[in-house]
Structure formats: structure tokens, C-alpha cells
Amino acid sequence: MSLDLSLGLSLGLSLGLSTGLSTGLTDFAALDPFFRIVQEGLAGLVDGDHFFDLLAEDVVVEYVVSVPGYPRRVRGRGAVADLYRGYGDVMVLHSADGPAVHRDPGTSVVVLEYAVHGRAVRTGRAYDNHFVSVITVKDRKGAHWRDYLDPVAVFRAVGRPANDH
Image 1 (cartoon, rainbow, N blue to C red):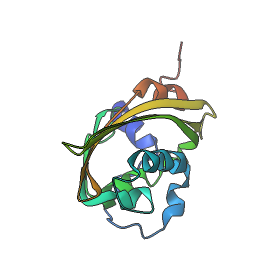
Image 2: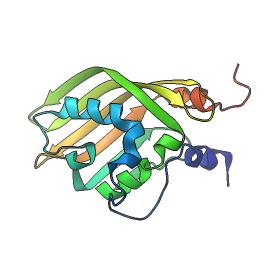
Image 3: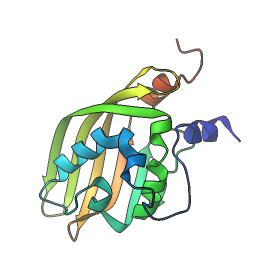
């Protein structure tokens, strides 16, 4: 396995094949601040009580700027849940802030800017990252999502490269 792929997989984001949320939402507790800030940004535009409910069953999520080894494209709500399922094994978020919401009613596109804060489980290092998420809403669900993040913030938190200068 390449170093890039192992880094992506070591972030604790499983690439399982199941499509349901059969183990419940407790698997995703480490992501609660992220879920809340997204729900806040999409309030009034989408229906659902939890982050996964906001997504269309056939949602397409593209990770445009991400970390090596992380999938570039995921299709389906269940696949997104599977991808996020092991997040808390590697990173635990304690807050999210700085929301900026830009809406274009004519195209049903919402741009969310926000930051998340937490700690890497293995290293104990702080994790502070900024995101831009471009979401297309269709039938009151997130139908297409393009995500941009700072991969260097992930590397710093998880301790890669090992001799960080």
C-alpha cells in the first residue's frame, strides 16, 4: 500500500460497502460539530433532522482538495456514512465556527465556509481546519457536494510527515 493511500485510510475513514446507518448515529459523534454547522448553514433549504437526512439518497460528494488516499468522489448517502463512520478513531471535533453562507436561489447552490476544531486521537495534537463546501440543493436535499479543505492542517494534526519542521 502506498504512503498516500495509507494516510487516507489511517484517517479512520472506512471504505465499507454497506449503505445503511444500521449502527446508529453514535458512530458519528466525533463529527457532531461539523454536522451542526452544516445544518445551520442549510437551514430552511433542506429537510431532515440529522446531517445524513439532509443528503439525497443518490447524493454525489466530491472531495476536490483533500488528503492523499481519500476518495475523490463518493455516490450515495450510505457511502458517505460509510466513509465518515470511523472518523472518531482518528479525529474528534469539539467545535465548529465562522460560518459564512452564500446562497444563489437561481441555481439552488449554497456555498458554506466554516472552520472545525478538535484533536487527533493518536497524537493529541490540535486540529483546526477551514472548509468551503459547495452544495447543490434539489427537492430540498443536498444532491451534489464539492468539498475543499486544508490538507496541511490534517497532516499537522496526525503527525505526518513525522519530522514536521
